[in-house]
Length: 76
Image 1 (cartoon, rainbow, N blue to C red):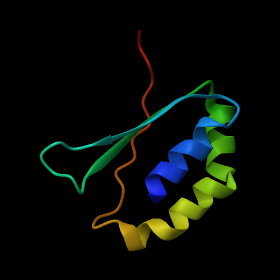
Image 2 (spheres, one colour):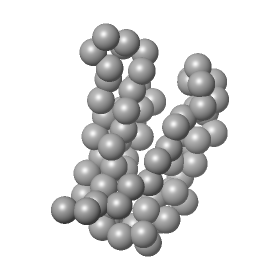
Image 3 (cartoon, rainbow, N blue to C red):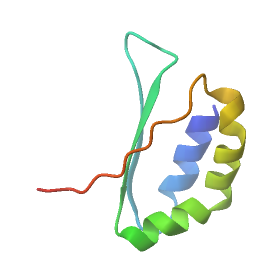
């Protein structure tokens, strides 16, 4: 539920090109979020948004292990 709220709010942000939530088919307690932002500034604004900060605040109570965050650069 909290992940869905995060996705819905993030998709409304200026500069958000994609924000997709996936669930592992064989491990239903594991999720992946793939995000795409117009630029670094849009990503920085996202990380300052109230809904993002709220999720970061509550996530330790929801997660079995800390989130594994990777920032990628599109090559093609």
